[in-house]
Image (cartoon, rainbow, N blue to C red; front, side, top):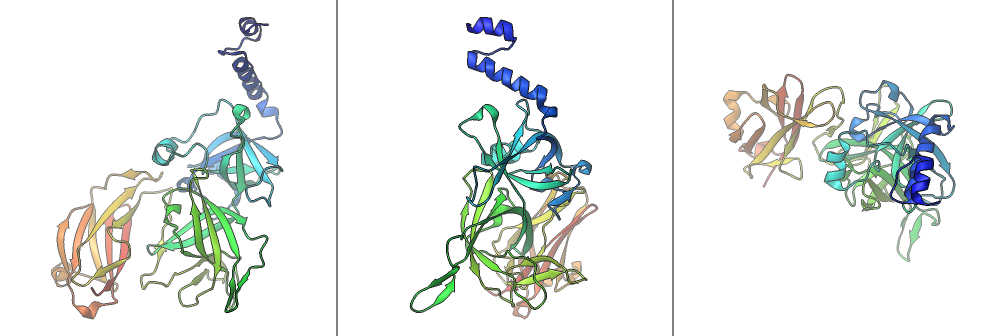
Amino acid sequence: MNLESYRRIAGYSGSTLGEVRKNQADMLMEATWDGDIQSRTCYIYDYYHDDEPEKSYKLSPQRSRTKVAIPAKYIINAYNSDGKDQVTYHIQFKPSQQNPLDYFKGEYELKYGCEFPIGLYIDIPDNKGIYRKWLIMQAANTFDPQFQTWAILPCNYRYSWIWKEKKHRMWGVSRSQSSYNSGLWRDYRVERTENQQKFVLPYNPESMSLFYNQRMIVSAPVDEGFEPIVWRISKIETTDPIGIQRVTLYQDSYNQNTDYIERDASGKVIAMWADYHASRVEPKDNEKSPDRVTSEIQFNGLSRQIKVGGSPRTFTVVFYDSDGNRISSPPTNSWEFLLDGRLIADNELNNYLTVESFTADQLRIKFIGNDDYLGSILTVINRSDDTEAKIELEITGI
């Protein structure tokens, strides 16, 4: 049978007989989709649109305003494994499915070269209808795209770290890295731990703040009086594939002077932070609420310090809408300054600061106080009707 005869009988279009058959297979899959026991309604989103960031299980995405419903098939696959020690899982979307996230193209595809849906979270219900958070890792069958599937793994740990005196937390996937060593390295002089671990996060501006040799606590919660397991980052990979970030750790030691276990009033562990007290500036929350306008102050420095008589520092306030998109400044916002928690009044400002430029969005200042203020904390605040942003800097010498 030639191509034209097949087209007339089957009623499908295509430039080759293979394309006609592919289109026919796609239409058959679409027609039988809802009857497949593997099909279910899932919810897809990125890190910034996760409105249930505190948990990864027993989720309620049906009530979410930021997660987007998407039909998918949930497939258990026992042949391919990311770490060669666990079963992997796949998802499959309808052949006609388009990218439903309007922010993905601008924020990920054009900016970083990410392919949809790699690096996104997806909430998938189990056989009892209970939703769990998963991370989409990569295309599972790159060389057989006729029925494209995507490898996924369950998010099983919420990673915590400190960067620029801010708390950062993100759900990711823990993977075993040292299945075949004893966990110790010895030579004729010393013995030290050589245990390793690996984890995977979505690739975005938040996870970009991880860097080589950074310390992290990755451990089960511990009772008071016990020490959690601490690690240092030894390797970061961001291109296999683009869209996820693979981080390798080697074991370090707990430092009771700088590390901190955060607990609630009942003593339950909320989070564990390495290098929490490495600076006199207490780290602040970095969570963005999806329900309101948020703001943050950015400044031209790598460390949260301002020097007595040193170079001027520039501070810029940035505002975001409920979807995490940058927006223009509100009509009324103002700057304030605190010195060790005390408000600096306008009539005494010149005793401490030289203001070189001043607008609603940007501020450029120089600290001119004397050495008596070494070790003090200067707080810069921007207030508006909807939000407040502040940044703390330790005053140091030149």
